[in-house]
Image 1: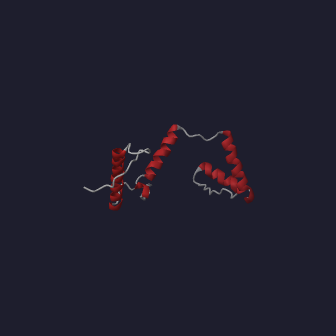
Image 2: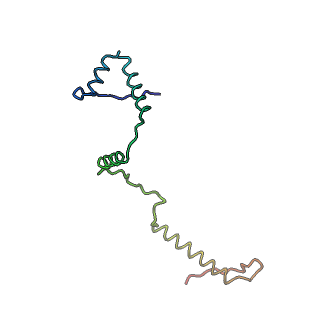
Image 3: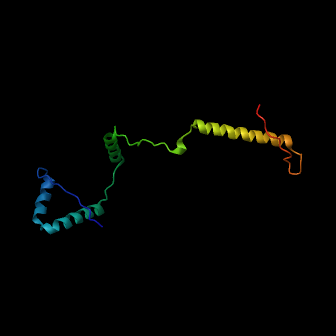
Length: 128
């Protein structure tokens, strides 16, 4: 696992940060990292960081301001299942299928009871 790295800056013109600079300069270079990790761990243990409702609102407002004007919606690509209109060929085939079904239903209704299986002798259809 890769170690987590962070860059820390201390500003000497800020009183409490100047004290931190002076203290860290006294430590051997190899011990600075361990000191900072231990100090952060102790601070978290002593007083866990929690955000108030006001802090959360301020964070939301900052994020909202930063993201304003940025569009996150990717253009949608039409899938074959999204197409709702039939082509002329599909429409014609659909109409023929519906007409054929209606014609068979009509034939079945006219020929019921002509033989044992109920289909009777089917007459060929003639177009009008």
